[in-house]
Image (cartoon, rainbow, N blue to C red; front, top):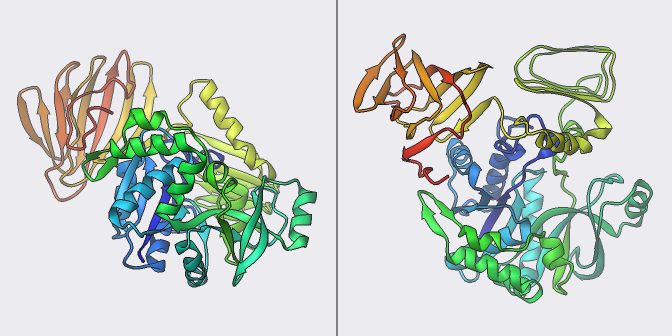
Amino acid sequence: MRIIPIILSGGSGTRLWPLSRQAYPKQLLPLTGSDTLIQQTVKRASQIDETAHPLIVCNNEHRFLIAEQLRQIGKRALEIILEPVGRNTAPAIAVAALRALDEDPDSLLLVMPADHLLEDIDSFRARIMDAIPFAQEGRLITFGIKPRYPETGYGYIKKGKTIGKEIFEVASFVEKPDLETAKNYLASGDYFWNSGMFSFKASAYLDELARHEPSMYEASKAAYEGAQRDLDFLRLDGQAFEKCPSDSIDYAVLEKTDKCAVVPLENKWNDIGSWKSLWEVLPKDEKQNVCVGDVITEGVTNSYINSSKRLVAALGLSDVVIVETSDAVLVANKDKTQDIKKIVASLKALGREEHLTHSKVYRPWGSYESLVSGDRFQVKLIKVKPGAKLSVQMHHHRAEHWIIVRGTARVRKGDEYILLTENQSTFIPLGTVHSLENPGKIPLELIEVQSGSYLGEDDIVRLEDVYGRCGD
C-alpha cells in the first residue's frame, strides 16, 4: 500500500489581502515562520511518509513559484499538475487521482490544502494509520477537527454511528453556523470542524465521482488524458477542463455517497482564513499584539500589525489589523476581516491591479520591482538569478534603458551581443528584439527605465523563451 500526498494549491487567499494577491497567494507566503504555508505542507507530508513525493495541483500562473519553493527546502514533487482554470476541489482531486492510478493502481491518497496549519504530526500520522483499513475497503475518509470553541467561520461534520476506534459514519455536513448554533454543536460533542483533509483510494474516489457527477468525471478524465508535458509540469487539456463543472468535493461527492466516514483529530489546526485567524495562532506580546516588521505601538492591544516597507506607528487602538505593503495599506477591525474579500471585489470592479500583483513580481528567472512610475515613464529594479535568462522579446510601445548595478549581463540588442558589468548601461529602442541573461555566479541587478506611450506588461511579444511561456 502506497500513500501519495495530494496538495491542493488553487486558492487565492483574498481575505489576507494586501499580502496575499492573485499572482502571489497566501500559500506562497511565510506567514507563521520562515517556511511558507506550502513548504510547511510539503514537509508535513514527508513527516507522515518520508518516501512519499506529493502530487501538487496548482494554478498555471504559480507553477514556477511553487517549483522554486520546493527547491528551496530540498523537496521534489511526484508531479506538478497545472489547472488552466479553477474548478474547485472535486475536479482537482480527480485529475490527481488519475495521475496516482498511473503511478500505483492501489494507491491511497492523502489530500491536504496547501495553506493550512496543523500541529502534532505524530498524532495525525497515527490517525491516518487508524483510517487505512477503512480506506482500503472503499471508504472515503474525511478528517474532522474536534472543536475547541464555537467557531462560526467553519463548516461542520456531524458524526453518525461508530464503525471503528473513534471512527464514525458521517450523518451530515452542515454549513457555517451562527454563534448560538455553534455553541450547541460544541456542547453536543457530535460535531467536528470540516478540515478539508481526506484520505481514500484513488479508485474509490473516482468511482464515486463517476457515480454522482458523471459529467465532472468525464471532463476531468478528458483533461488528464489530453494533458501535455511542459518542462517539469503536466499541463491539463484546457478545452476539456474548462467544460468541467465547478464544485467542491463535499458537494459533488461526500454529501451524496454512503461511503463517507469521519476520523476526528484533536490536533491544533487552523485554515488561516483571515487576519484574525492568523493573529490567533501567532505568539503575542504582553498586550496581546502581534507585530511584524518595523512597528511601534503605544496604548495598542489585541491587534495584528504588519509592516513590509515602512515604519508603522499605532496609537490608542484595540482589536485592529494594520497591514502595510509598498502599494497598499489595510486598516480594519479585527472582527471584520472576513469581509476583506469585498475590498478585493471593489478593486476588481474599479479595474485596479492591487488585487493581482505586488509591486515586486516574481518570475522563473528572478524578479522585478516597480520603484516609481509616472506619465510615460516607469523605473524598475530587476534581479536575475545566476544562469537565468529572460525571454527574447520586443515591445511595440516602449523603449528601455538598462543600468547594471551588480553582476554581469549578457545582452542581445537586435543582431548585436554585448557584455555589461557594474555601472555600464545600454539603450533598447522601441521595437528592437532583445534579451537579457546572467552568465555569472552571483545575482544580476539592474535598473530599468521604461519610456513610451504604454508601459503595461502585456506589451511583451515573446519570440523565444527557455521557460515555455511564449503561449502564455
